[in-house]
Length: 298
DNA sequence: CGCATTTGACCCGCGC
DNA sequence: GCGCGGGTCAAATGCG
Image 1 (tube, rainbow, N blue to C red):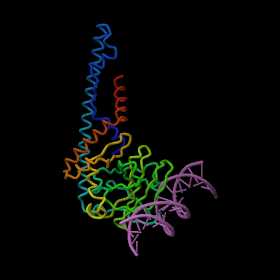
Image 2 (tube, rainbow, N blue to C red):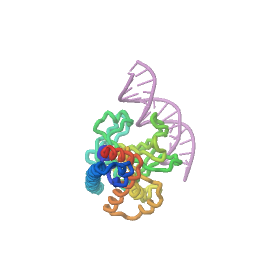
Image 3 (cartoon, chains in turn red, purple, cyan):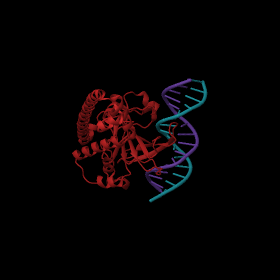
Image 4 (cartoon, rainbow, N blue to C red):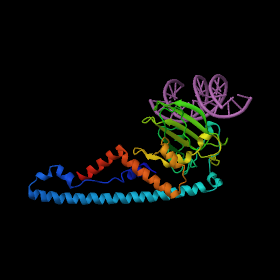
């Protein structure tokens, strides 16, 4: 999802509650009768305009929901397609740094661990300079809410990762950990994990490349990977300042709920509800919306 | 003993 | 050309 689209989406789903009571509080009651009549007409116009805006916003959110559902259906279709189809056109496995090539792709790192919550993003400004040179390459990024006291930069996503380096970067005092997919020796996928500079409870995982193997079954491998996928699916929130999806791993109740089987429709519904709730709760989003509304009114 | 993690050194691209 | 900074390597270390 593009940032602009996110912004549009994030300005939805809040009730506009400017009514006559609000208007009288602004000193309108003290006006003379002709003035009052004029003001009343003016305010009626304003109210109808606001209601119209509200209606448009509701239309936009329903459109966005439909688009989201359609995209997610495509995503599930892709997940169900054969591995050979996914691997067509995939970057060749590499070992040496000079030969690292990151092909562009649109569906990335979608497995039983991070269903539909992974986004493909353009290379960020702070990403590797070598990657920046390749204008076609893209990365996907997920944010995982984790206990700040937890020092291990482990993002459980269903795959097996081998840590091969850690570095403190200039723009973030928290160390950045570098992982390779260890499930298949030839798998070119890499992962960088670093705590958010703004919120230490958030782990930002950046995925580069595409797995050239099937996702490991959750029952096999290390036991800590159990129920990873569903736990992530059920609890997400949105940071209005960024298009990145947030995943909350700390909610025990949701962990329990997530273990239940969910149909894709239920997942979509739950996700849309969570997104709307998260946006409405976000103070930054609300302040932005208030500015937009006040700008329209005054 | 084998595997994973840690960590300092090194590589490489970019900006000045 | 040099320094900076991100990314990677590989020996050392830890752990089951």
